[in-house]
Image (tube, rainbow, N blue to C red; front, side, top):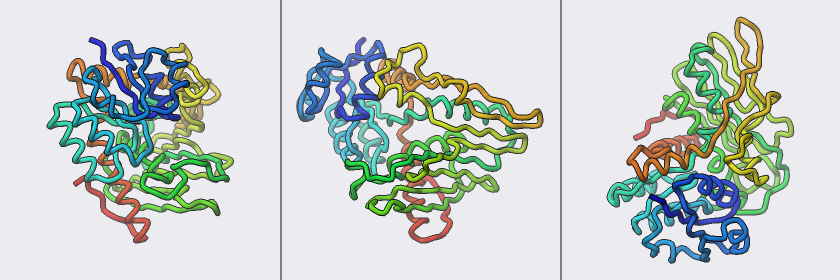
Length: 344
């Protein structure tokens, strides 16, 4: 069976991430694209129908799966409409902007008996896969401190909705869901949270810096993103009773996709040796080869979920936990104190 897919949004996320990944999954057919960039779609996917709005997509009974790759504030209404129309849905992160909306979408998906999942593609990053395997192996021993950071150097305000005041803007909502999801995968729910959120660039009108400290008993997990770091800090730094692992740089898949590299290219997701992290233990320091990153696995799992009733690649409940952490961090930053955390 072929799964007919409609992609809503053909900006950076839609054109560079979702469309190429959809195209390389043999059980998918990219049938419709909602965008005003008809020429760009025609060049890349000449068989796809293009429309400027979503009405045709939701009315088309042949569409099985809708992928929502639009600005953050539109995720909830578009996902709601797609589910109501009987479609399976992939929605880009963040899943929603508040917990109540997320819970309502999950309830609607259940009532419609449709698959709903969130595009937390960074679960399949080369660096994260390497770190997850290392933690699971116990080679570092009990982890005392883990730092997950995503640094950029962007002194100037970048045009677009992400840098303008409004629902869904700012770096905490942009990069926070990825870092939080990775922390939850590695360590589970924290006991307490401390949030520090700021606008550091003089012209910034939305948050462009955050540091969240998650407490797990005596363990500390620090999640941070900054916009004024010309010399980035390690992407991952983990320190345990038996050793440390420090990794600079970021998974190469985004850069490859933006450059037009196909996801089925033999070198896709493979980091060069000079980018491998360094493992330090009693035997000394040595490079640890990075696992191959593979975002294709997300859409492979989506197809399995639709055709074979396998679990979705990302449980929406995980995304809700991430939203609760963001809400708790904002309260902590506003009140200037440590807050307890619970999923409920």
